Structure formats: C-alpha cells, structure tokens
Image (cartoon, rainbow, N blue to C red; front, side):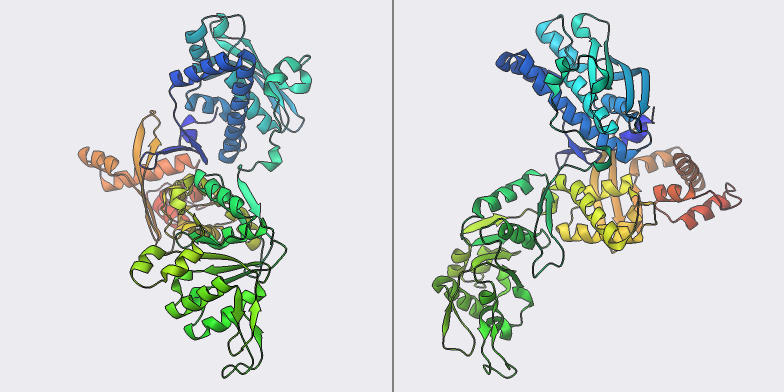
Length: 563
C-alpha cells in the first residue's frame, strides 16, 4: 500500500474559512448518527429499493472523485490508494484478500474485507440484523473508484455483511461483463456515465464564448462554487431581455468575461459585442469615442467616424469602469440612454440606436454619489439589473478548477510541459487571499508554467516571485492523526513554512542549529528518495543550494543523482 502519511498531506483544514480540502475536492464532516438518521428517513420515505439506489449512486460519485484525486497524487499506485482513502475518510478499514489489475487488458478482480464499516453500524442500530447486505453506499463507492481507474464499468457485490450477522463485510469486484447476473446490482447503480481514464477532468461549469473585438481567443467561465453559480443564474435570467445590467466587483473578478457570457446567450448574440474601458479614454476624447465624430469637428478630425454606440447597434455595448467618467461625460451618456439617439461630435443630425447596455465598476457607486463624483440619475438608469461578482477569496471552491484551466491553457500556449503542482503550491494557492482575483491567479499560473522545468512540478518558488505575501492558517493532518497548525508564509522568493511550535521544542531540547539543518536535509532526501531536485523543492531552496549543503555535511561526493 502507498504511504498513508503521503495521502494525509492532501487533507487540510481551513476552519476560519469553514472549508476542508482533500486534494482539490472540498469535503465536509458529518455525524455518523446524522447520516444514519438520513438513511433511515430515506428508507421510510421512499422504500428500501429507492433508498438503496440513491445511496449507491451517491457512493459511486464519491468513489469516482476519489479516483481522480488518487491518479493526480500518484498515477502508478492510484488504485492502491482506494483502501487508504476509505480509511482516511472514516468509512472503514480495508483488508485486501485478492487483487488482480491489468488496465491495458481491461482485466480486474478484487476481493476485499471491510472492517469497522460505519454504514452497517448505522443500519444495524436502526433495523437490527437482516437477511441482505446493507453497505450500499460503500459498494457504490468501490464501483465508482474502480470504474474510473479502469476506464470501464466494474461492479462490486457484497457477499458477506455484518448487517447479516457475519463477523465482517466482504466484497468482490469484477468488470460487469464478467458477472453472470449483473442486472440484480445494476438496477441500483445505473451510472449515466463513468470516467474514461484518458479524460479525467474536474467537474466544472464552462461557458464557451465566441471571440470578440476585445478578446483574441475564446473566453470561458469556469467554476463550481455557489457564488459562481448564483452569478451564472443571474445572467441566464436577464439574458433574453434588453435590460441594462450593472456588474460590480473588485478588479480582476472577470466582469468583462461575464458581460461576454451574457451577450453570447442573449438574443443579440449574432450582433456586435463592443467593449470600452472608460478609464482609458482621455477626457477630451470621451465624446468622440462614445458618440462618434464628423469630419472637421476639431483639428485632426480628417474623416467621419462612428462611435462605440453606433458600432454596437443591434448588439451589446460594454462600458467598463463606468465610475471613472467625468461628471460632464456622465451627463452626455445619460442623455443617450434616456433618448436612445446619438449625435456625433460636430454634427447636427441624430441617429437612432438599439443597444443593450452593460456597465461595470470596481468602486461603490453609492459612495461616489455621496461624494458628488457620480450622478445619481445616471446610477438609477444603470442599476436596472445589478449583479455582484464575488472576489476569488469568496469562491475558493473554484480555485482548483481555475488552476487546472489556466495550467492547460498556458502549457499549450507556451509549449511548456511541467508535470503539475507540488502539494505546497496547491496549499498556498488555496490559502492565498488573491487581492488581484482571477487575473492575478491567471498571471501567477502562467508565470509558474514558464519558470518550471520540463516534467517537474510547479512549486512555490515558481509562483510567488513578485513580492506577493502568502499568510494564511491551514491545519494539516500529522502522521499521528492529529491536526497541526501550519502557517503558509511566503514573501517574494522566500518560500518557507513557519514552524514555531517545532522551533520551541528544538530549543527546549537544546538542539544545535547545525543539527536541525542536518535533520532537515536528511528528512528531505529521504522523502525525495535521494532525488536532490525534489529534496530542494521540499525545503524551498534551489538544487545548487541543496547540493552545496549536502557536500558540506559529507553526504554527497559527486553531484550525480539522475535528476
């Protein structure tokens, strides 16, 4: 079996945020008795067969997600992590009786004993000993995990169960075609689809958008969080109307991307989407840019030109950073919105326009009104359908999916091939508050893809290199099963973990500085199986620095380790 301590590194707690992570998946703790009560209510409300179906499918989905995690942690021994994950999640302890796996040939046979199953305990407490096996959710979990690993449906059947009076639970798993009578179990599973090993991807919502004047490539929205889905629901609700929409949110949350998404699913999607950043327009050119200009209107106006309103006729006009417009420009914009006509600079003729207006701001417009920096009447014209886009720190569930999205994007764009991310890098990115939001995350991932060596994971030293400060409390699981406080700290190129508790203990035991350093070097080399590059990454130093320290302590004669 793989080292359980290695798998435990994927489990981390952020109590201040109310989040538990297992790898890239958000988890939550539930009382076993609470789950038992739910199980009992399902049986009483829907009947045994329907309850078994629901619980089996729930287990299948959980098993499939754990298999994805296992393949990311260690694709070589991914299947062996299934029993470890069962134990780590408090489901049961797994004893392997027989295991034969040949993914290439599609051959599988597994015989496992489950000890201390929480599911049969809850069933027995409610209904006592019966005549049928009752570990429905766990059987579904085993099928989901193995099917995802094998790339084909593997069906498990419980042949012994404590719920029937046996001393333990025992299951046998085989590909569905190897069973003589799979129908009796398939009716409770009936998976709509199971993962293809070559196409394992995190589940996420992606809205693919057409290219526009403001984006040279196809844009997409990625997310699974409640905050993300709430925003998606809002844009779907207003999409088929012509109502003015006002997006608000911090810089970098993706206001223009959401505006593009809104346009792409509206009944104006075949018409132009024109975007303009109001903060980038010089004050003396605002009117010309928005409303157009006639030839000779001012020095340098050598030809007539349509403004953004005219160019977006029939489609959508996106006004980004609307709060930066001067009061004079706000007054002219208000007139156009009210009357639905534009008059080019230097012209006497008005032109009727049909434009869906979307505005965005990263400032509090109500505060700007009180400060007499924004017109109240314009605000109410714009604030017909407000949508607040939350900062990334309020949608941390989306961070793993965004990481994967940007990693794939920039690996392809820059033709670089890093192998993935270190555990420390993932922890730090989830813990970081992202003041620059998605834009900052995208930039940092691109930086990491460029800096990381080929076939090596992206580490902290490749990500936070521009003065970012990572400081967040995370609780990790120690080898003894206890939660320990980890403060992820990183300032510029200084990638380190604050270990105040361990430092105090070392001082109390009068450990020398040289002794502490030697112990760290030995531990890193042992964890990296003698690979200097990986050991250096664990300690947050360069390979050259690691090799120098090893030579200094006499542990390295020739700097050759096959890295």
